[in-house]
Image (cartoon, rainbow, N blue to C red; front, side):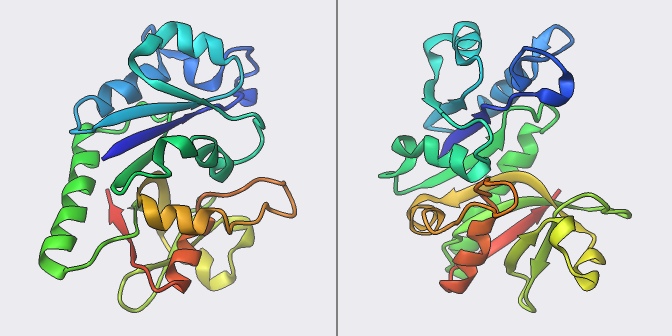
Length: 222
């Protein structure tokens, strides 16, 4: 398994000139904690998608990682993953996609996601196309909802602003950490159209495309 860390955010809400992932917690950038967590996994390689003030990130973390540049800082998560396509295009394994501003993610959570994929393949004979981290909240207001079919497979992730009344009643929310089987990601991500409202390419749109293809997408509840 490889990991792609999305680290190109502007961090405009911080009202700072720093890249979003370089804001510090206890003296270390948020990205430092994410990379520390990833080092505890059995990963073959880690790459970073950078953008705004990319040199700040490269100079801090050095040559231990591969870097890919996202030219459009407002291109969305799908565009960010496409920016790193040379890292995973020809890879026949799984790709962990995680945001660089998620310093509280625990290594054990990611290890459990890895283990779940292997268990599904071994005991159910199913090659998962994607696994997304989710959580059940008493009040899911403001979060993307995980919509499933009767078998428990993920049909799509719908943002609250686009959700129907019934979908807003769903309490399982998207946690923003994903593991993709790269051949199926490659097949579907190029078919995602930019949002008419924002122009962004949303990575979560691939789940519905995978479902339409008959592929299996599941959620892993933290």
